[in-house]
Image (cartoon, rainbow, N blue to C red; front, side, top):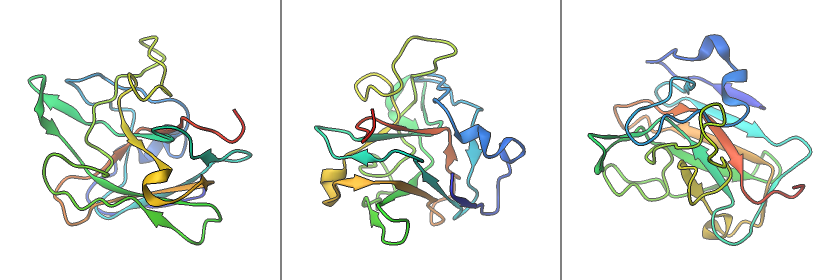
Length: 176
């Protein structure tokens, strides 16, 4: 982790910060949100660095952002989403953002709207497999980036709910 600027409105997980956002996700599946999260607070942000590693552009999703989104009554059309904008950087100074402009489903390139299924403490789902892990997938090619050493996640202050970060996982790593 490099830095965090937590916003107002939530303090959940701050007593366990930064450890709470490090390591694999602890998803609760389709119909329940994990409590192993850090609430960023209204407009809050966090910058994560991958010491000795980087995300590289490969086929499909290059990294996953895990929040604690869940569906209401198991209906994928009624997801409880808490959205954030995701940006990447190679040097920690110049940033490229995935466009997060949605205010309703489908939420596109926003983080915080796909349930998290992977939880190594409770199941055998690979947290780095975009087809089964859940979480929100991001493909560097979509924004013309080939390598990123930093990820910045910023809560959407224009929306009422607060983004809760569980974890970030590298699918295509420079150093596997």
